[in-house]
Image (cartoon, rainbow over all chains, first blue to last red; front, side):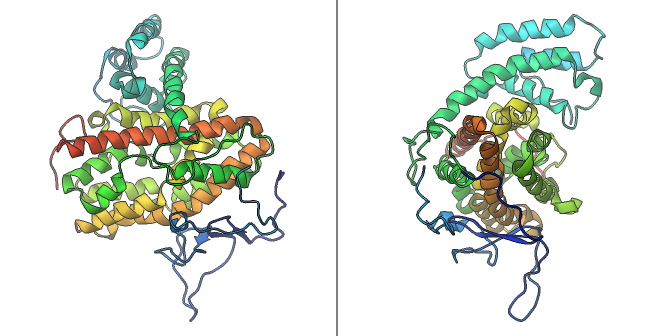
Length: 82
Length: 361
């Protein structure tokens, strides 16, 4: 089992959530392809990974309704319940 | 908040006591405890008992914003703490009984495979805890109030809906905040990150309780904290009391983590539908901002609460796993009862509130 996870090596971190979004923490800016800032209301954001969110680029939890599945990097095949 | 109207002998005795100061009548607290001890065996269902739930609510309120005209010196009065424990014990037992059906694999109405429960937390990592909590949250929690609000609810029903929610949402996040100094490491950092967002990330106008107050004003409702305590049924008070019970008792810190995780995990989609319901009746961004905010915020919070708060806590204190589950399933049970109450009344064409509220707006 995991003990405390290793500290991120810098102030920014990206967490790939199993079966869910991508959590981004730290000092960053989200921009459109033309460089316009995307309005952001919070420090830590969840970015849509399943493609079904109604508020892209942010996650709205829809991945749970469509049965979106991922594998945990480095832990393939570990998604079954213990 | 304003002292509500008593709903029975215990709340009546409590309000009479609180009108004075501790020490005015040294025997009075003991008399009230005796009265409560005598009443408790007569209570059929403490979750649905107005006198019990209102008394607990007001005893807890001494630790939050206080009660108008009541001296803050009552907060840690040993006699009142003892009275609170007298009421908390059967309340906690009733919650455990009500929560149990939501923890097994035979959950009725589950459209996902019901959560398979590990026998112990040994070897459970934070991903596994989050998986289990997501599975619990995926169980149907009642007859679809969010869908009703989105598609069919009348203006009167939307106002009732806000009134039920106002008991908690006007102090949104406060009960879970009690747990912060009781956690450490990853779980503590996770809870603080979520709570900071709940409290607006440093911007008072973005506090969730502030956004909710704006929604209430948009529908002509009184946004003062506790203004509608008299109007709501016992189970609505119980749904807030459960959070205070968990938050104010260190031994139940696992239950706080489980409660918050499920609260966040069952929020994004319903809030999307709630917002749609208010838009359907012509309300604009000032009213729907609260719901729109929760669609986005809780999609973040559910990940942090499930994996880092609840999961991190179980990794560092495996013995708390059963309480994490208790907190998680208790929300499911209480929310289902509240939803049943509200939808049942609406299906019968009646108000879901106790007392008619003054018409406004």
